Length: 132
Image (cartoon, rainbow, N blue to C red):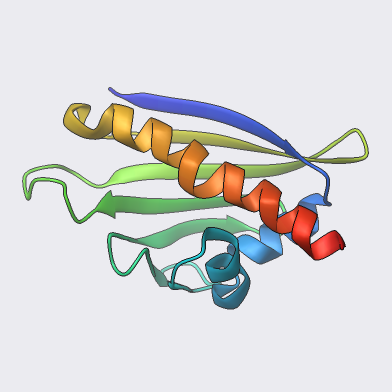
């Protein structure tokens, strides 16, 4: 099984990061592309003009989001992957721990790099801009 594990520290509260991830407007502002995301279990999401899609499998308020997740570029025979994001306090800020399992081998490197390029770096920049 292909697994991606990443952890990122932010100068923000875990609650604000959790809320921003599940807010379509804030999520879109963070990644710089249209995101539509539900705040309820069973609700769907799309990101990057439909390039990514899935649904919320579990939400533990202010702590955890688990989603089925897939890229439009994956083969029809590829199963959905499972994304788990955990939000916790770390020092004066927060940490987001990501576990992304069942990513197809043919896209493992792209998804691994994509988290850093399209989420973590823009999110850090968004937080810097919002503090000004």
